[in-house]
Image (cartoon, rainbow, N blue to C red; front, side, top):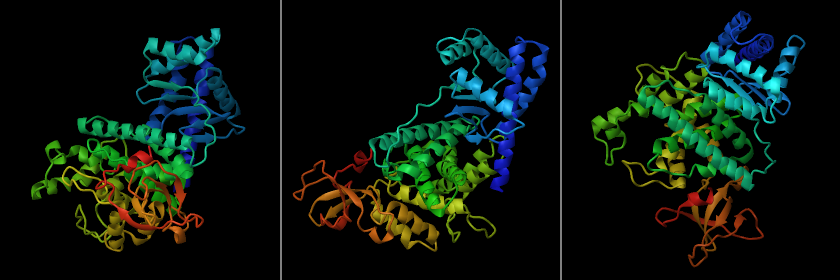
Length: 472
């Protein structure tokens, strides 16, 4: 099924490249407004519209001498040789890393944009990208977006400061993207998920190289922005589980998108209920338990329903069902919970219980929450996925505050991938044996040259310690 989808996207990508090539060639020979441009414009607009129906970006990118269409790399073939290399040359000569023709782009805008390429080449300014961007602003071509090629990143190890900074930047970007989509849902505006998919893809790249940095950031708690903060955390935790299931990168995108928008239905909950500071009464709980259904209704407003939106709907609808179907919403027929739903339910429960909520001021410690989830394997949660989750966050979850045999306190930074070493994570010492807070060393508890053992976990909030500071 996925191979067939990839093949369809590949064909659509080649149609976009050929359309770009024909328009570029025609616009080089004829001025804006000439009848010769009408047919290639019509064909190109049809491809842009088809990309929109499939929730793909009509975007061409030139990076490291390779051509991409909506993140899919194209390879030249005999039939498309001229179109392929001409498109790459045009993007390179104008300093364009990516050009995206949005669904809002009109025929007049696209025709004018190709005219600007011709205008640029007649003079070829010192900074062709800046000149093109300025002229696009003057003409008001808002339906077409261009960007310079990204700066090449220096190779960085998973533990480097660079990886930590990139993790923080992606976390912040993701908060912004989710906030935008949720606000659009509240206001009844059309939902645009393309930016969300882009940050999910970036998150996956970091998960594969700097997982510890991202998992550490899930300790971030923001009371005022709980829904957005929670959604990002659930997305990261869900993708960490899915990665251990052995899913492909494209499947990880589906899981990440479904997880990050699992609570989109809360945009339909009245604020006086959603932000109530005390316990919910029966009627308010009944409203809150409708948010999975509200989520599906919101997603149905998207133009067209494809495989990706169907999976996001599954995540929204199923994340409170429980594998024994004792959760909500109640369904009038027996059904199994999907893999995506089972993954998200674990991540959602973990982040929710370790967070202070408006109606529950006391958060659980990470190890208490993990124990709760382990105890409910086979009933509420999938036992195999729970084991993978424990592997991702560790017996002493990342961000836990622990008391060592030396009476020092430490924060868990990283867990071993070896199950036999889950009891001996990597930690950062934050206090002396006398209880004085310090900026101590990082210690691998598996190192027997410096014998230290974990005696117990400690409630960081009760100690007035914010463990988040050790990950940001």
